[in-house]
Length: 188
Length: 387
Image (cartoon, rainbow over all chains, first blue to last red; front, side):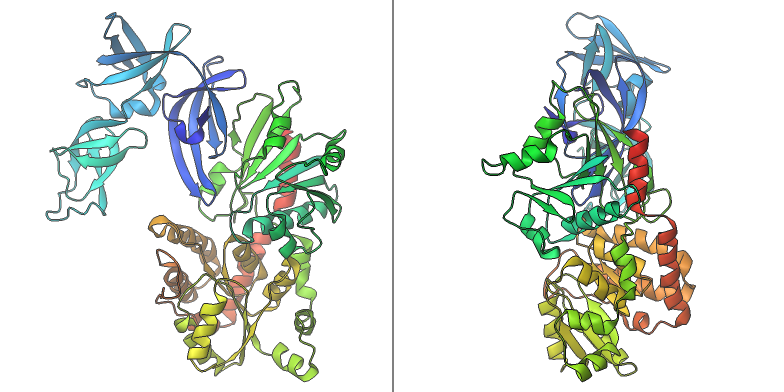
């Protein structure tokens, strides 16, 4: 069974007869009883998408689907082409299929992603929890502030804007968590 | 319609307090639903509503069926069976995402029963903007025959509003002498003397209350004060500060009170120091000046919640009055944890001595909340749309 806290972009789960994939995490709010999560899901049977609020208490049935490890081959406009490392077969996913994950990817990436298949079609991507990105823009760094307690917005080479500690500068390579886009550490 | 209202008591009496209040408000509606209340801590329920038997797993209280979360025992199996005979659980109000007991879960998710069931997660009260965003939002369960939705109380008309139960709204009619008699003070002259003072309720978390006591002492030189010290976390801390200051005003330790008696005290008072969401909602509805203490959260996140409430209050006050209110609220809540030695920079003298315009601001805020409507009515309207 999957708890709400196990769900992330690309997770496929069952709700009754429907099979849904998480496309976007639209924010979470901490309540006294737990976190309430807002997410956009796509119903793989009907193709419809909807925004949902999920509280921490609900459990869902995991769906056993084919999962293949692949690397990104190239990006063609709104389409992301991945290549199976064993069969060398190529599969195309749309930016919509990738959901929030599209914000973490650049054409140069070489990491393994897990592509989920449903009825022979790729329907979702799960990225490694931790990936490296380069800051392409942020306000100048503050030397000496290594506490990491204060933060500023930074634009990454994938286009994603995330919060980074004040000591970061343009060109700094950072590691971030793809589950929520949080800064993990500076890569030395 | 029959509603199963599910409550797990997390701490203190806030959760069960909201459930009890909601049950009363629902029962007061012109087309009142039948109610089954499923509660994990009947002892806590008993303290705010003494007619609840803490040892009875199935019982009738005020026309409601009250059931223990732990489910039927051999001795109570017949009572549970009777509670659901011909009227199985179809609409569940899950309070604060507390989950459901296994026996109710089995009933809701019985694969042999394809009838549509609905669960509504009634969330905690917040003034933050996300209440509007999440209110009435669809959710999911593991079964297509069990649908779930979110329902958020709040301070705007785009949320579920606040519970406007008749007992609370009618509590304004009780006189102070009746209230004092209700808590056991029956000496005539003493009663009259206390009734005429400026009443300040003190119901907070553990804290160093010296600054607040000093401010009340200063104010009491202009207007004699009676501090009504609520039973619980802040009582000893406040009394210590009050003793240390040489008992500069009159103070009365309140016993633990059933909810309706507590409501009467809140409404009859002139100034309220309250903690938690339910008492904050009551304070806001009372139209009296109040100071809210939110429970501490990681990274002092309670300040976000306090700032959100202040944002809802702001339009009802002049800039000068609001500055004093804002400063007091933020200083009182700026801490990482609670404890006897946790002190802040709060000044409540400016709030105690608010002029007519400032006091009218609190009344105006209360009126705006009443205009948003009764949460109980809004919940039933929503259920009629989705069930």
